[in-house]
Length: 490
Image 1 (cartoon, rainbow, N blue to C red):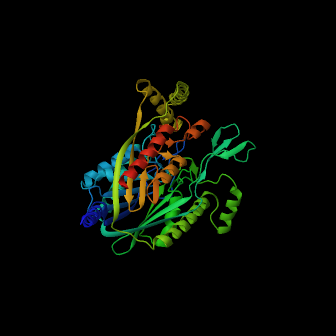
Image 2: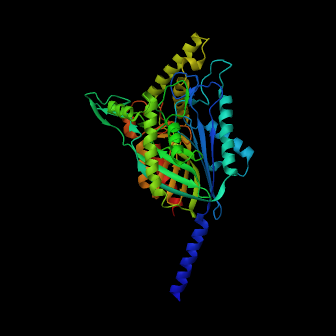
Image 3: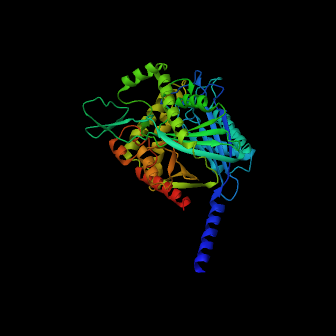
């Protein structure tokens, strides 16, 4: 009798878990053009670049997921944007517009992430030139945020029930370490590994291409989520708007899977990664030429798209054998408070000197705006000075940053706002309880988060102006992320 009671309790417990944790999915998808109609300042280089046209349009791509039954926390709205990062002003503007348009949408369930193209508009910065054809920051922000918000609302309101998903991964060499370390222990970003004193590349490379496929109740493929550990910055210094390699990826995947399929590009942890080869460049150029690709940067982007399409196609061959529904689905969100990197007095004085020089140069040339004198410098150096002053009164100041974790069956998604160095991302993957884990960086303002060894070696991306958060804060971030994943895997 005791064994019968235990068996009945066991069955009841299983049923309860299924009610609480398993749910049928509804899905909605939208892709929208977010290319500004006027000239805009481009974000991602020190000098001001005002657009001189459009190479390839910018898009925002939305996937809205909802659990139809059985769960309290039951939605995740993924949004991939062709922007450098997702500053707080953009997220706040998007969420405000979404809430105003449809109050049923929980804006805390919106995951906004950037592909990190360096040829997309800036949303804030120093004073711009006074030109009628040049949009100012508030106008840019309103335009882009309205387009994204409308797409989110449309995806949510047009979601259909009985959706299914399938997933797999393959590998392709897309991103490469861009930090070379020399015999004296010093690093250089985009250094020269051909030097006699070159020692090693500082970090590992993650060549995994993760793909998740979604189809609606009619078994029609409607979205593909593609996770790549490489920023979309092949074309870094152009004066024309460009979605960079993700444009070519979408074109290639649309040719393979259909134009109506929404492609969500995500950048995994890749703060020390570049899409540019660091050695054997001539052999790769030769290969692209023999394939018939265009010369220069366009050919590089076409080659990346070819590799990603092959990897996604290989993942599709596996994933198509295992479509899933009625799976555990949970989305958690929290604000982590991370220790900031301490600014020394010497670092503050150096930054203050640079900032004073920029301000003096603008004062001596009143016909030039501050942005024309130095576009990135005022914010870069000013941030260092401000942090130093803050730390004098609050030496244990903390950096508040949002983290989302999502469980979808055996899959995990976790976000961070940073250009997160690859080692941190690998740590999350190796400690996650999921069968496969998608790390999504640049889901917020994209300051670099460097490892302790990178900071010791120096160079851009690991110097004080590059880092708001300390490497200890990086350790805390990845541990809290994994703790959140383990909690929802219970």
